[in-house]
Image (cartoon, rainbow, N blue to C red; front, side, top):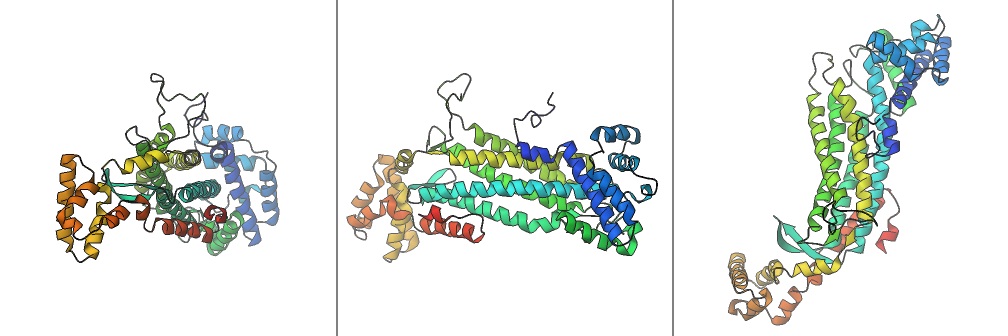
Length: 458
């Protein structure tokens, strides 16, 4: 019987959730113990025969999760139970060398890094897929003029595709953040009880280096009993930051799907119901789910920051909550990206409504460009500004089109011809650098060698 919504299969992919299952976590921990034994034998810290037996026992799959849980019920210590389970299957000559020079958090922290190494592979792959979908939409709509809104008000003209390019650019930078951050938070630690290397002494750093290379992790340069939690805080922050970008995209889609705007619509499959009570509704539920999860990711960042301050060389006040915030952050982000891929790839764009909305203000959205022409003809900025403002307010009051009142105003028509005004009021002429910005983002994606985007340019 599922305990949590995540357990029910409602949220998160099977491959991501599999990383954090108890059996898989145990696999990571045992793999770490074997790697340490091999490294210690390599530098002659423990007998080669002991290392080989430990490695053989771990590879045999004879160490069961059930047995470890039985042992933990007695010891009340999960890592000690793992060590005891290995010991039960080893010869007496090997028993002294199991977990030699290690402390529990060497196992816990390094296995967490192993989990997150695999989790980020999934996250990065899905981010790349999302970028591809965003850039396809950017290029498809690069010549579609739309309303650019600030403060919830019509501000100026932009290409509709520019929205997608901006989001793509942020996701590209998130990939860079992950890659740059790996050396700070995908870490291996084998430095023992208080970070001195303990029983391994002068060979401790060499053992850590060997184990790190074996596990594709980075050796921690200095630590207490645990990897400093600044590292985890950065990792959770990056996850929260990516989630916040997804939330930003989701909120824009939700707003643009509002009845009053109606420019986009989430994909709505056959048989889907928007409301149990209102048959006509098509609600942006996928985007709303993304926004809902973003709130959790942000709160996890706060918890991760709180975990930095621990007593002396460590205490346990971080431990319990990390068993939640780390896997849940990864699982929810995975779900959010996958959901956003579905939203963007199947997004219905109402081009007719987009063009209609440009005219809601009866031409006043072109005020910026009228101002620019007056300035180019030598009219002082604030003189031109006040005149345009006066005319716009008059047009609003009389409910006339802005073009008509401008053309009739003496201060305007003595400086701007009707033909020039017509050119200004053509939204296709006001996309400015939108197309170039979109192409620049596509070029950035190509340089990062995420995928082949040449087909998107066509």
